[in-house]
Image 1 (cartoon, rainbow, N blue to C red):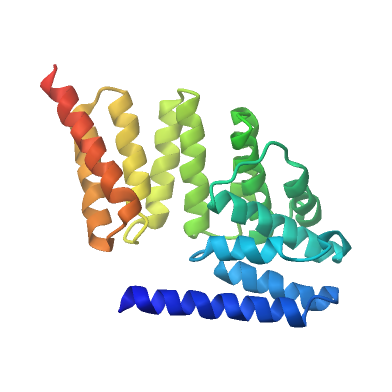
Image 2 (image 1 turned 180 degrees about the horizontal axis):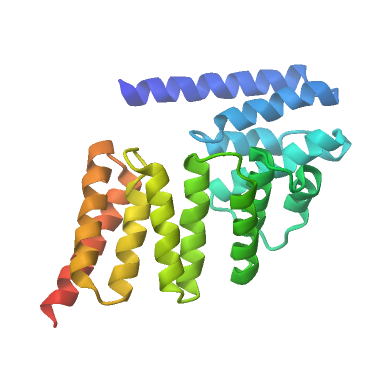
Length: 238
């Protein structure tokens, strides 16, 4: 019943989005309604958000504010659909508009600028933009935790285990008690495992798995079982 309800809700959202596109494709003010609808779908239906955004005719004719929002949302939708970028020209439209005054949009723009640099393999630049995004956040929430989590992954790629651990712990403190806390716990475990501290790695992988099982996070349960198997395998050969 739950999955049937989700399918019905998705079809209804698609219908609403297409209706908005049909009715509101003429003026900048009305185009913004479609942008806001795409934004509302982003968390649960990023594929639908991407379809809506790519269906907007002549985005270059939008107002400056709407072009900035369009650039931010399209970058976000592609990111959530695992489509990589090889240049940062689009997201810079949003970065230039939102600037460096504290706001969620400014933080998002700099975060996705960092994500774009990470796609391009320019990790030091990605770290710099993630740190900017942290400074621009107006408060603590799941998005800030996600920035810390991705920042930690970049530090790991640069073999900076201590600062990676600190970033993962900051993400965990924000998410502690929530459904997403398994992600930074897994990151903490990864750092311990890379340092050959298998007991600590095992402890944190198990904590992460326990939380993932409670919320039935299918994206994380399988990988965590694999992580635990790798630890047990490493222990058996020492």
